[in-house]
Image 1 (tube, rainbow, N blue to C red):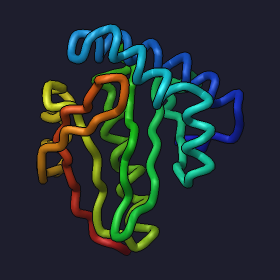
Image 2 (image 1 turned 180 degrees about the horizontal axis):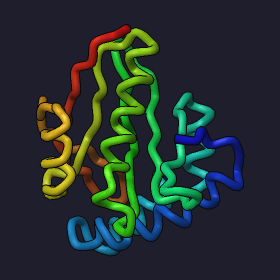
Image 3 (image 1 turned 30 degrees about the horizontal axis):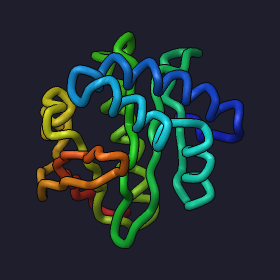
Image 4 (image 1 turned 90 degrees about the horizontal axis):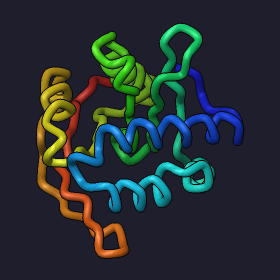
Length: 163
């Protein structure tokens, strides 16, 4: 994982996010909500604001090619994994699992005991992958994100031992 350093990295992530989201999430939440969420949460401007709020962004690469990204922020007792996305062309290579292991190590190095994330209730493949990696569903969340849209998610938690 390579830590995001500047606006050029964020521009590249925004482009990748658009490809990932339009392909993966349009069948789940529809084209209009995807467009709204890309602008609100996955644009370079939104990510720049998140960096100022304390989020840390990392690029996921397959060789020399950026194929995904992740972002987290430290909370009491854990890390909130806000984003972890891998392009469909690079799925099945263990990159998502490696990303989770990276975040797990970050939590442990910081003396934190858990990783928390939210995942769309209808994102069945991701839910299955998280369960295989040891995450547990802790609750259902319906969050109003504006413009009449909601995120209908599960919160999932992975307990990690601190070092």
